[in-house]
Image 1 (tube, helix red, strand yellow):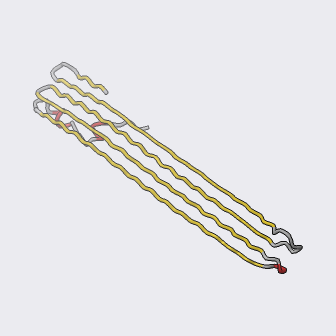
Image 2 (cartoon, helix red, strand yellow):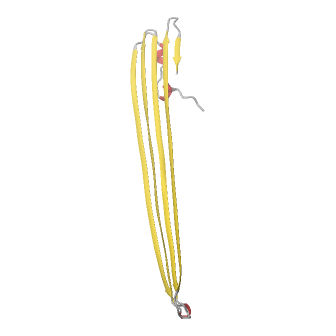
Length: 169
């Protein structure tokens, strides 16, 4: 895992400020980034088949049908906030950096289907006709959710002239 350097990540180079203790500098910057993505889709299908025949003179009717519906969607959102305050005057430099980032993503899908089969057969011996019936149903659902976030706080304080330095994160 690599270590993050908050100053470098924000594109700030303090080398010139820190090398000239007589300079007076005040810098304050804030940046906000926000993003959102979403996608969705659906599909549907159906079919039916009807067949009538008379094998061997015996009438037969067959009806088959089916259908399916599916839907899916996903989203993603994230953002970040960075704040940098820098002040430097003769012999003293202070830097404070705050960074916050967060994100969330998720998705889901549903699939459903159904089938049926119905057959009616004539009876060659006379009497009542025979029939067969069948039904099938399928259903599936799936979902997921992901979140992440982070916060970092960095303080740097330097004094020249024998007072030392203090670095905090």
